[in-house]
Amino acid sequence: DKLGRKMSKSLGNSPDPIQLMEQYGTDGVRVGMLLSSPAGNDLMFDEAYCEQGRNFANKIWNAFRLVKGWDVADIPDTAAQREASRWFANRFNQAVAEIDDHFSNYRISDALMASYKLIWDDFCSWYLELVKPAYQQPIAKGAYETTKGYFAQLLKLIHPFMPFISEELWHDELFGQRGDRDCCIVATYPQTGEFDDKNLGEFAIIQQIISEIRNLRNAKQLSPKTPLPLLINNRTAIDYGAYIECIEKMANVSAIGFAEQKPAGTTSFLVGKDEFYVDIAE
Image (cartoon, rainbow, N blue to C red; front, side, top):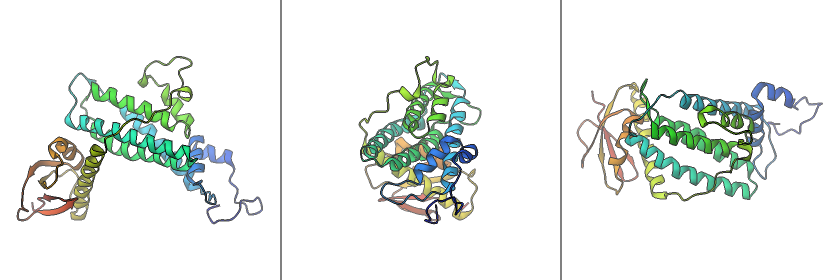
Protein backbone atom coordinates (compact mmCIF):
# COMPACT_ATOMS: atom_id res chain seq x y z
CA ASP A 1 0.00 0.00 0.00
CA LYS A 2 1.07 3.68 -0.04
CA LEU A 3 2.67 3.25 3.43
CA GLY A 4 4.89 0.46 2.12
CA ARG A 5 3.02 -2.36 3.91
CA LYS A 6 2.26 -5.61 2.15
CA MET A 7 -1.45 -5.87 1.30
CA SER A 8 -3.30 -8.37 3.47
CA LYS A 9 -6.83 -9.08 4.68
CA SER A 10 -5.79 -8.82 8.32
CA LEU A 11 -4.51 -5.27 7.81
CA GLY A 12 -7.60 -4.37 5.80
CA ASN A 13 -5.48 -2.55 3.22
CA SER A 14 -6.49 -4.60 0.17
CA PRO A 15 -8.92 -2.62 -1.99
CA ASP A 16 -11.81 -4.42 -3.66
CA PRO A 17 -11.15 -4.09 -7.43
CA ILE A 18 -14.86 -4.27 -8.30
CA GLN A 19 -15.58 -1.45 -5.87
CA LEU A 20 -12.72 0.60 -7.33
CA MET A 21 -14.10 0.11 -10.85
CA GLU A 22 -17.57 1.18 -9.76
CA GLN A 23 -16.11 4.32 -8.17
CA TYR A 24 -13.46 5.33 -10.73
CA GLY A 25 -14.41 3.45 -13.90
CA THR A 26 -12.47 0.50 -15.31
CA ASP A 27 -10.22 2.69 -17.46
CA GLY A 28 -9.51 4.87 -14.42
CA VAL A 29 -8.45 1.83 -12.37
CA ARG A 30 -6.27 0.52 -15.21
CA VAL A 31 -4.49 3.89 -15.40
CA GLY A 32 -4.20 4.01 -11.59
CA MET A 33 -2.61 0.54 -11.47
CA LEU A 34 -0.06 1.50 -14.11
CA LEU A 35 0.76 4.89 -12.57
CA SER A 36 1.63 3.09 -9.32
CA SER A 37 3.77 0.50 -11.17
CA PRO A 38 7.04 2.10 -12.34
CA ALA A 39 9.61 -0.47 -13.49
CA GLY A 40 12.11 -1.76 -10.95
CA ASN A 41 10.48 -0.51 -7.76
CA ASP A 42 8.17 -1.83 -5.07
CA LEU A 43 4.62 -1.23 -6.28
CA MET A 44 3.05 1.26 -3.90
CA PHE A 45 -0.68 1.36 -4.62
CA ASP A 46 -2.63 4.49 -3.74
CA GLU A 47 -6.31 4.98 -4.55
CA ALA A 48 -5.48 8.58 -5.51
CA TYR A 49 -3.88 7.18 -8.69
CA CYS A 50 -7.25 5.71 -9.70
CA GLU A 51 -8.82 9.12 -9.12
CA GLN A 52 -6.13 10.60 -11.39
CA GLY A 53 -7.06 7.96 -13.98
CA ARG A 54 -10.73 8.92 -13.77
CA ASN A 55 -9.81 12.60 -14.16
CA PHE A 56 -7.81 11.69 -17.26
CA ALA A 57 -10.80 9.87 -18.76
CA ASN A 58 -12.92 12.95 -18.00
CA LYS A 59 -10.32 15.15 -19.72
CA ILE A 60 -10.48 13.03 -22.89
CA TRP A 61 -14.30 13.04 -22.78
CA ASN A 62 -14.48 16.83 -22.33
CA ALA A 63 -12.02 17.39 -25.18
CA PHE A 64 -14.22 15.19 -27.36
CA ARG A 65 -17.34 17.16 -26.40
CA LEU A 66 -15.55 20.43 -27.16
CA VAL A 67 -14.53 19.34 -30.67
CA LYS A 68 -17.92 17.78 -31.43
CA GLY A 69 -19.70 20.98 -30.37
CA TRP A 70 -17.90 23.26 -32.85
CA ASP A 71 -19.72 24.77 -35.83
CA VAL A 72 -17.73 24.42 -39.05
CA ALA A 73 -17.43 26.96 -41.88
CA ASP A 74 -15.66 26.95 -45.23
CA ILE A 75 -13.17 29.66 -44.24
CA PRO A 76 -9.34 29.71 -44.33
CA ASP A 77 -7.34 28.51 -41.32
CA THR A 78 -5.97 31.23 -39.04
CA ALA A 79 -2.23 31.69 -38.56
CA ALA A 80 -2.53 30.27 -35.02
CA GLN A 81 -4.32 27.17 -36.34
CA ARG A 82 -1.64 26.59 -38.99
CA GLU A 83 1.24 26.95 -36.52
CA ALA A 84 -0.53 24.78 -33.91
CA SER A 85 -1.07 22.05 -36.50
CA ARG A 86 2.55 22.14 -37.66
CA TRP A 87 3.83 21.99 -34.09
CA PHE A 88 1.48 19.21 -32.93
CA ALA A 89 2.36 16.99 -35.91
CA ASN A 90 6.02 17.21 -34.84
CA ARG A 91 5.21 16.79 -31.15
CA PHE A 92 3.04 13.72 -31.87
CA ASN A 93 5.79 11.98 -33.85
CA GLN A 94 8.32 12.82 -31.13
CA ALA A 95 6.02 11.35 -28.47
CA VAL A 96 5.33 8.15 -30.49
CA ALA A 97 9.09 7.57 -30.79
CA GLU A 98 9.44 8.02 -27.00
CA ILE A 99 6.46 5.71 -26.28
CA ASP A 100 7.84 3.03 -28.67
CA ASP A 101 11.16 3.15 -26.81
CA HIS A 102 9.38 2.68 -23.46
CA PHE A 103 7.40 -0.29 -24.80
CA SER A 104 10.52 -1.94 -26.27
CA ASN A 105 12.16 -1.73 -22.82
CA TYR A 106 8.96 -2.87 -21.04
CA ARG A 107 8.56 0.45 -19.24
CA ILE A 108 4.76 0.32 -19.49
CA SER A 109 4.17 2.92 -16.77
CA ASP A 110 6.50 5.36 -18.57
CA ALA A 111 4.72 4.71 -21.89
CA LEU A 112 1.42 5.62 -20.21
CA MET A 113 2.92 8.76 -18.66
CA ALA A 114 4.24 9.93 -22.04
CA SER A 115 0.77 9.36 -23.57
CA TYR A 116 -0.85 11.16 -20.63
CA LYS A 117 1.35 14.26 -21.06
CA LEU A 118 0.84 14.29 -24.84
CA ILE A 119 -2.94 14.30 -24.47
CA TRP A 120 -3.40 16.42 -21.33
CA ASP A 121 -0.65 19.01 -21.79
CA ASP A 122 0.11 19.18 -25.51
CA PHE A 123 -3.25 18.35 -27.11
CA CYS A 124 -5.77 19.72 -24.58
CA SER A 125 -3.89 22.60 -22.93
CA TRP A 126 -2.07 23.91 -26.01
CA TYR A 127 -3.29 22.57 -29.35
CA LEU A 128 -7.05 22.75 -28.70
CA GLU A 129 -6.75 26.17 -27.06
CA LEU A 130 -4.88 27.50 -30.10
CA VAL A 131 -7.23 26.10 -32.74
CA LYS A 132 -10.60 26.61 -31.04
CA PRO A 133 -12.65 29.43 -32.54
CA ALA A 134 -13.74 32.57 -30.71
CA TYR A 135 -16.95 32.36 -28.68
CA GLN A 136 -19.96 31.50 -30.89
CA GLN A 137 -17.78 31.62 -34.02
CA PRO A 138 -17.26 28.68 -36.43
CA ILE A 139 -13.97 26.86 -36.91
CA ALA A 140 -12.27 26.63 -40.31
CA LYS A 141 -13.07 23.35 -42.05
CA GLY A 142 -9.40 22.53 -42.62
CA ALA A 143 -8.47 23.00 -38.96
CA TYR A 144 -11.53 20.95 -37.92
CA GLU A 145 -10.62 17.98 -40.14
CA THR A 146 -6.99 18.13 -38.97
CA THR A 147 -8.10 18.15 -35.33
CA LYS A 148 -10.36 15.13 -35.86
CA GLY A 149 -7.44 13.31 -37.49
CA TYR A 150 -5.16 14.02 -34.52
CA PHE A 151 -7.90 12.95 -32.09
CA ALA A 152 -8.35 9.59 -33.87
CA GLN A 153 -4.58 9.00 -33.70
CA LEU A 154 -4.59 9.78 -29.96
CA LEU A 155 -7.44 7.29 -29.38
CA LYS A 156 -5.32 4.56 -30.99
CA LEU A 157 -2.33 5.61 -28.90
CA ILE A 158 -4.24 5.46 -25.60
CA HIS A 159 -6.23 2.31 -26.43
CA PRO A 160 -3.84 -0.23 -24.79
CA PHE A 161 -4.25 1.63 -21.49
CA MET A 162 -7.87 2.81 -21.73
CA PRO A 163 -9.70 0.44 -24.09
CA PHE A 164 -13.25 1.34 -23.08
CA ILE A 165 -13.39 5.12 -23.55
CA SER A 166 -11.16 4.96 -26.64
CA GLU A 167 -13.35 2.32 -28.32
CA GLU A 168 -16.54 4.18 -27.37
CA LEU A 169 -15.33 7.46 -28.88
CA TRP A 170 -13.81 5.69 -31.92
CA HIS A 171 -17.31 4.64 -33.03
CA ASP A 172 -18.88 8.08 -32.59
CA GLU A 173 -20.28 9.80 -35.67
CA LEU A 174 -17.68 12.57 -35.23
CA PHE A 175 -15.13 10.23 -36.83
CA GLY A 176 -17.46 9.11 -39.63
CA GLN A 177 -19.32 5.87 -40.25
CA ARG A 178 -17.46 2.78 -39.04
CA GLY A 179 -17.95 -0.73 -40.36
CA ASP A 180 -18.68 -3.66 -38.02
CA ARG A 181 -15.01 -4.68 -37.95
CA ASP A 182 -13.57 -1.16 -38.02
CA CYS A 183 -12.69 -1.10 -34.32
CA CYS A 184 -10.01 0.77 -32.41
CA ILE A 185 -8.63 -2.50 -31.01
CA VAL A 186 -7.60 -3.65 -34.50
CA ALA A 187 -6.73 -0.22 -35.94
CA THR A 188 -3.12 0.27 -37.05
CA TYR A 189 -1.10 1.61 -34.12
CA PRO A 190 0.53 5.01 -34.86
CA GLN A 191 3.92 4.69 -36.56
CA THR A 192 6.95 6.80 -35.71
CA GLY A 193 7.44 9.60 -38.24
CA GLU A 194 10.01 12.33 -38.73
CA PHE A 195 9.83 15.44 -36.57
CA ASP A 196 11.42 18.88 -36.79
CA ASP A 197 13.53 19.62 -33.70
CA LYS A 198 13.87 23.28 -34.72
CA ASN A 199 10.09 23.77 -34.77
CA LEU A 200 9.71 21.98 -31.41
CA GLY A 201 12.44 24.12 -29.86
CA GLU A 202 10.93 27.37 -31.15
CA PHE A 203 7.46 26.45 -29.96
CA ALA A 204 8.83 25.58 -26.50
CA ILE A 205 10.16 29.17 -26.35
CA ILE A 206 6.74 30.53 -27.40
CA GLN A 207 5.12 28.46 -24.63
CA GLN A 208 7.60 29.88 -22.12
CA ILE A 209 6.85 33.46 -23.24
CA ILE A 210 3.10 32.87 -22.79
CA SER A 211 3.71 31.34 -19.34
CA GLU A 212 5.87 34.31 -18.30
CA ILE A 213 3.14 36.79 -19.31
CA ARG A 214 0.54 34.75 -17.40
CA ASN A 215 2.82 34.64 -14.33
CA LEU A 216 3.30 38.41 -14.58
CA ARG A 217 -0.47 38.90 -14.59
CA ASN A 218 -0.84 36.75 -11.48
CA ALA A 219 2.00 38.53 -9.68
CA LYS A 220 0.52 41.96 -10.44
CA GLN A 221 -3.07 40.73 -9.84
CA LEU A 222 -4.19 41.75 -13.33
CA SER A 223 -7.34 40.31 -14.87
CA PRO A 224 -6.76 37.69 -17.63
CA LYS A 225 -9.27 39.73 -19.67
CA THR A 226 -7.05 42.84 -19.66
CA PRO A 227 -5.02 42.87 -22.93
CA LEU A 228 -1.37 43.82 -22.49
CA PRO A 229 1.04 45.31 -25.09
CA LEU A 230 4.27 43.34 -25.67
CA LEU A 231 7.62 44.40 -27.14
CA ILE A 232 10.30 41.89 -28.23
CA ASN A 233 14.05 42.49 -28.23
CA ASN A 234 14.96 39.76 -30.73
CA ARG A 235 18.62 38.74 -30.43
CA THR A 236 18.25 35.26 -31.96
CA ALA A 237 17.22 33.75 -35.30
CA ILE A 238 13.66 32.92 -34.18
CA ASP A 239 11.01 34.35 -36.50
CA TYR A 240 8.54 35.67 -33.95
CA GLY A 241 6.37 37.05 -36.75
CA ALA A 242 5.09 33.51 -37.46
CA TYR A 243 3.95 33.09 -33.85
CA ILE A 244 2.40 36.52 -33.19
CA GLU A 245 -1.18 35.24 -33.40
CA CYS A 246 -0.37 32.33 -31.05
CA ILE A 247 1.05 34.69 -28.42
CA GLU A 248 -1.84 37.16 -28.80
CA LYS A 249 -4.43 34.41 -28.39
CA MET A 250 -2.89 32.47 -25.50
CA ALA A 251 -1.54 35.41 -23.47
CA ASN A 252 -4.22 38.00 -24.37
CA VAL A 253 -1.71 40.44 -25.85
CA SER A 254 -3.19 43.53 -27.52
CA ALA A 255 -0.25 44.34 -29.80
CA ILE A 256 3.23 42.98 -30.44
CA GLY A 257 6.12 45.18 -31.53
CA PHE A 258 9.91 45.07 -31.56
CA ALA A 259 12.41 47.18 -29.61
CA GLU A 260 16.18 47.18 -29.16
CA GLN A 261 16.14 48.73 -25.67
CA LYS A 262 13.87 48.56 -22.67
CA PRO A 263 11.31 51.40 -22.75
CA ALA A 264 10.78 53.32 -19.52
CA GLY A 265 8.03 52.00 -17.26
CA THR A 266 7.91 48.50 -18.72
CA THR A 267 8.43 45.20 -16.91
CA SER A 268 10.91 42.85 -18.58
CA PHE A 269 11.68 39.14 -18.58
CA LEU A 270 14.18 36.93 -20.42
CA VAL A 271 13.46 33.75 -22.39
CA GLY A 272 16.73 32.33 -23.66
CA LYS A 273 18.73 35.25 -25.07
CA ASP A 274 15.68 37.30 -26.09
CA GLU A 275 14.20 39.97 -23.83
CA PHE A 276 10.52 40.89 -23.59
CA TYR A 277 8.92 44.08 -22.30
CA VAL A 278 5.35 44.34 -21.02
CA ASP A 279 3.79 47.75 -20.37
CA ILE A 280 1.66 47.31 -17.23
CA ALA A 281 2.00 50.91 -16.00
CA GLU A 282 -1.59 51.73 -16.92
